[in-house]
Amino acid sequence: MRVTMIGSGYVGLVSGACFADFGHDVVCVDKDESKIAALLEGRIPIFEPGLDQLVATNVKAGRLRFTTDLAEGVKDADAVFIAVGTPSRRGDGHADLSYVYAAAEEIAHAIRRFTVIVDKSTVPVGTGDEVERIIRDANPQAEFAVVSNPEFLREGAAIDDFKRPDRVVIGGDDARALEVMRQIYRPLALGRSPIIEMSRKAAELTKYAGNAFLATKITFINEIADLCEKVGADVQDVARGIGLDNRIGSKFLHAGPGYGGSCFPKDTLALLKTAQDNEAPQRIVEAVVAVNDNRKRAMGRKVIAAMGGDVRGKTVAVLGLTFKPNTDDMRDSPAIAVIQTLQDAGATVRAYDPEGTEQAKKVLDHVDYCDGPYQAMEGADALVIVTEWDAFRALDLARVKSLLSSPVLVDLRNIYPRDAVEGAGFTYHAVGR
Ligand SMILES: NC(=O)c1ccc[n+]([C@@H]2O[C@H](COP(=O)([O-])OP(=O)(O)OC[C@H]3O[C@@H](n4cnc5c(N)ncnc54)[C@H](O)[C@@H]3O)[C@@H](O)[C@H]2O)c1
Image 1 (tube, rainbow, N blue to C red):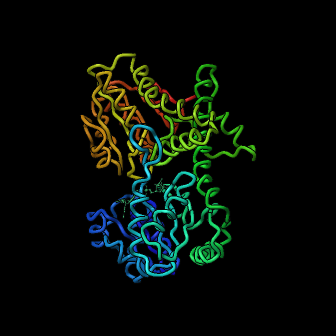
Image 2 (cartoon, rainbow, N blue to C red):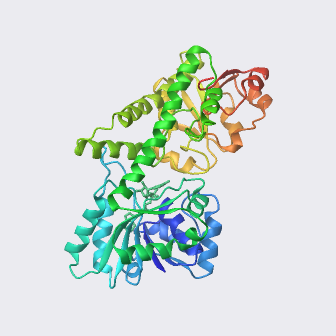
Image 3 (cartoon, rainbow, N blue to C red):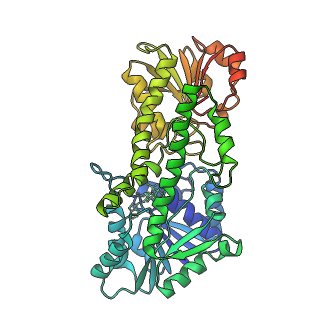
């Protein structure tokens, strides 16, 4: 199949490389010239484990190419995937669909034969109808069908998620389009991944409902963690105790500084807007959004309390800036609110992240960015672990203690055993333990 991805970011580039690896003929298009220039030179513009190798192999095999020329990329395609960003619209939290609609308009003028237009971006219910209308208006002769195919991959494990998904969701009712989609995903069907077909609207809503449910699970355990701290229980015991119940499941039950990232914050907000517009309020998700918003700065205040309540003139070492490990993505990372809260209270922040520093510099000012974890700790009054990169799981505690001016460790990801840290002479603060 000839597949074109419009948008070569985290989703478009990973999906495109994986489709090429399945044997399809793939063109990845992006309007960002620097991104395409990097890809043409063999450089990967994002950090995603294994992606450099996958891209290189498929480029070499002649199955994957890159262009800024959308019309050229689209004209011979069997399927054109829209994988552009859908950030929160400034001001009201609705999904900003301007990139999706602009892509649809450009695609409309470029198609030459029956083409399946696949919405892979996360978009509110009814967006497929609007994309269809835009294409029809722009090119009344065009032969096409619009399908929804939301993406569930996780950054940091994106290739594995794409190649071994829990399920693939395809929404649409055009028989020719569904056949093209089945051909594209055939390698996954052969590997026994469930491919489920449904209406376009159900597929669009499935993505939001899934993310809202996961955000709810995280927020639920975070509130239980707060209760654990008050009553003297360990949230990790409680999470294990409930997670082994098959009806609940153990994933997404790790207490921490609140969810962030490129999806949950904007997708929960967009779901609330859709719910309001349709007069079907989602009270649970409303509570989740409010609780999570409050939590991020509360974690900054937790650090201040751990340091005796006053951080003016003090220095805090922060390990981990990205919203989770194994990505360079800083979008809505809890580290932003934690660091800003500390800075607002008068602290100086020294920080280290294995991959996120360049992105962090775009969103966090006045941070002293360091080249390694131990460098960040030199002379600091406390150490805070915000993101659980593997590199932070086995720090040399004796060395840490010798570098800090006072031995305070705030572990917002619960990656250290209390006994070991206290045994090494630290004051240890975790979440819900
Ligand atoms: N990042 C994730 O983990 C993830 C997971 C599942 C779903 N999603 C969804 O997938 C979509 C894309 O997310 P992302 O993280 O890949 O975004 P991204 O910002 O990394 O990439 C989007 C790319 O689209 C390009 N683009 C925008 N308009 C274009 C146009 N008209 N023509 C060509 N290129 C254009 C941009 O230059 C950018 O490179 C979003 O709707 C997101 O919610 C993301």
